[in-house]
Image (cartoon, rainbow, N blue to C red):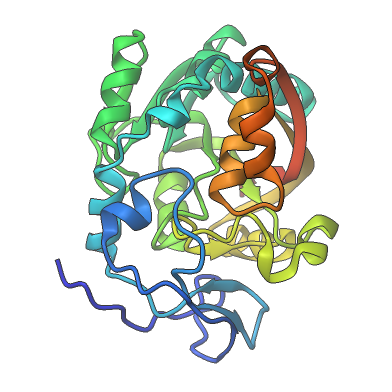
Length: 299
């Protein structure tokens, strides 16, 4: 483990010209702490803005190897505790985007599938679903549910010659050390006319602009911060054409949302967490938090 941060180029246009946007306040270097939990750490990164295309990303950062080791060490039971809620969220999103999901086959691959909630939702919608996940703990959780999840990443996996009608990256592209090359590899696994679904924290929304540097998705597990424009540019370069984009409304238990808000330092969330009764914590709550679901076709 190198434990050194090195300079990196813009993930979209490869420029090395940038200006600093956020300066780190917490000198954390342990990959397990930075990448081993879904909520990550706030204030541990320097975030810069590309002078050429406006993309915001972490620079400098730890090596790709250290980042992957951090993700593989994840044992995020809190994330998996909302499994049933996540299945509902994914199914709602698939139904909402159904008219734009006309693919050459119903065989789907979910990259970074965590405990497999997306796979279960996809199977309920009639898909033959497979997943890739670097966290050994989450792979085990998903396999115990009877889901077809393989350990690894799009760069390192057992699906050498497999072809799919749809590939999804749900809240994943912001985690990938090299999103351009990952998309190019994903494209090779798509059938002709296949679809790519990317759900991502959109830093170009009005919510994000109001939050500014306190935007809740600026956490150590997120290496990149895409707007719709920079994501479209990245996907076009990787050989995809944009079809549609819609807001993503997730459903999670109220208590879990308050707990995450407390970890992220949202004002008053800690006080609310202490006083709300257990039965209220269990109430499912649909919400929008600047996430966008974009669909692309293999060009």
